[in-house]
Length: 207
Image (tube, rainbow, N blue to C red; front, side, top):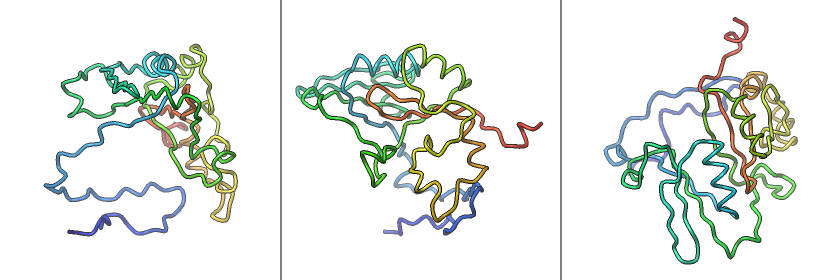
């Protein structure tokens, strides 16, 4: 079996503030039909979670399945139905386990409850108009963690210790990108990133 290391990836360290774009990895017949299909989140209140992902982000409920101890809600784009879930991408699976309703989710973004910072970070959606998406989410009563045009380290999902540590402060190039996106919080506390379809480079905004 070959090494799991991608020989196309240049070795670190990487210069801050630059996109490193490796050449395409050679295709492997063993994985040529693999795809990242879905992500699963555990939820407390199906009504609230479905409202958030259906109404705020346009996903539709593909199917619901009661396993006995828990219920599964499968969400995805409107052109996906139950017969095509296995060949689709961008699906979201929600697990509602009633016996776990008293438990709270701790993420890698919350250093007060999780000092290691290890754990799930966020989901990401691309949209045509970030500002309009934020307003819609606010109208539904959900929390905006990070608005447009802001680049505070407190809303980058890392601790201040990391963002201003021995490796130096966050570079301006990343802050420029970060100002163009937003973060909101779903009903269970998961962070959801909202990214424009096109992220502008500094020279594009000046032009």
